[in-house]
Amino acid sequence: MIYYRTIHFSDTDAAGVVYFAALLSICHEAYENALQVKGIDLNTFFTSSDIAIPIVHADIDFYQPLFCGDRIQIHLQTIQLNETEFEIKYQVFFENNLDKLIAKATTKHVSINSKLRQRTPLSLSIIKWLEFNQDNC
Image (cartoon, rainbow, N blue to C red; front, side):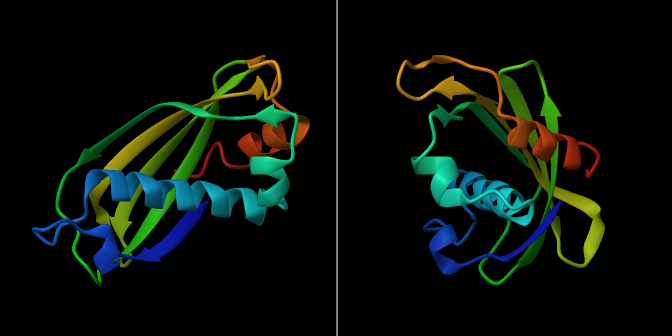
């Protein structure tokens, strides 16, 4: 899955450079978009389900700065770790230059029963989504 985005002024800090938390948020946009592309209703997924899938770990590495107006593409790859966990790996490039990696990030997600707050197996729709996105980076 590839997600395209323009860097906005609100994504930058006082120095005019994309703030690390802003790029993690943009990666989350790519995640949400990838869910929608496979027909997963975001309203149900994030608010109306018995299963929640919180992020339990995130990291990001920058290799060069991003500025307002830059056009980027984010390559998203999923990895199922076990029956309750998965990771999403993100690679960020300029829209027209795949030769130079700008940043990479990872988010780790755990499936839980939203009422009991205990781990529960990933849903079939998420497992299918993971399989669809596993070889895309």
